[in-house]
Length: 158
Length: 105
Length: 91
Image (cartoon, helix red, strand yellow):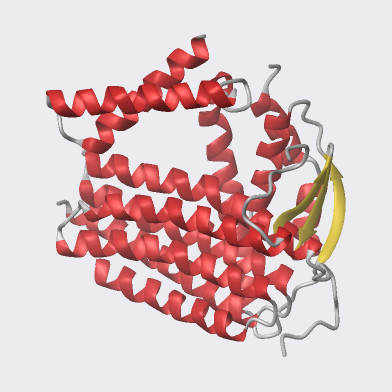
């Protein structure tokens, strides 16, 4: 129930900020839209810890700055390799274990790997992620497990 | 608008543009499909945020900034999903992930 | 300032088009088109700031969503050969 209220709050805020008009007609249209969206979501049974994971929202502000810093570092590395005339790449595929317990946590981890240039998650089988890495250094970066630990901390206990 | 803020915007736009063009060069230069994904990912993660950030600084605190933040969030949520879907579809479609002799001709 | 951003984005789009035309497999082409789409979002935003018509940002927002959905739909079509098939466990 608290997830439904939170979804209503988020949707209303997005409506008000995106429309930019504040009069009765737009309030009415917004209320109808929010009600319709929440009803359809409830019917699809997607308002659960997967579809609306607001319990991890607070830790976003710890995880994302770290992830951004990682992205910037690996971007500079990949850019250097792309621009160097000899194209020093050594693509490889390896399997890495995700230590997250929930599907949300594993999704966050897999997407973080994909978001970081130089590594892409190409397949997921249970808790095993198949990763394609552009270079040995970027493969070692994932295999060291630092990002895994950060994603597990972001996922939390429930 | 402050002159120093303008300078920050210029730097951000030049960084974003440089990474975008580098990603474009990468997508043309890279030898096989799975290596091209990395170049495209670079163009997506390092080209859009600095340019959108510069626009946010130019716009100041307004609804425009909120829309830019929303564009940034959408791009950041959808680009890894699209990359992963592409990689998985290519894998199932029979593109070899590691092929040292691969050539794009 | 945004003229510089537009020029950089356009150069990137030209390079993406080159890969779209060259791309040996269909996935290369989809990858390049996806990149072209995200750059289009940025281009619309830059044009919005150049012309001072920030309403265009709404279009950029919608384009970002449509681009993603379009790419996923095309990928699904090439993987399953149809749009209407459900995921695993769903008929």
